[in-house]
Length: 155
Image 1 (cartoon, rainbow, N blue to C red):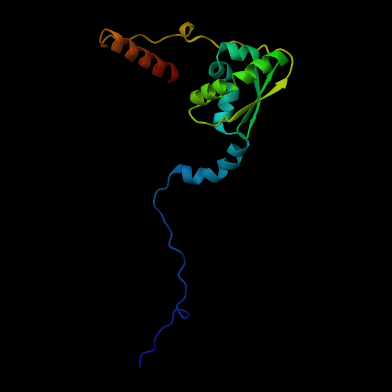
Image 2: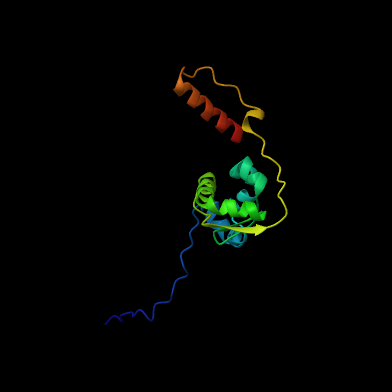
């Protein structure tokens, strides 16, 4: 009689290796995850591009100090803090819209000396690319020209 093999008698084979091409995201994620936990790229953009994201009025009166746990801490004077508390929902929605996600949940204000943040450079004073000549006339052409100029300025 042939001897039956039991599962316990069969030696375990080494796990199969996958030699297929893998994306870099799968390889680099374990390395970058701890760095992004400390300061997410969107939070770094918020702090670096504050003048452009907040607008000239808010940037002149308040400056970001810290962003953690969905709370953005802004430095401003006492009277400005009182005013900004009333407009906080509008400020939060404008910043979240500019950042592309809902990462800011609440604002916190700390009283510091008046903020003299540099004003952002208005878009009309930057070098605008030429308007393409093959666009239609009217509102559609104007909208396409603005879209083209926005894309060209970012790239």
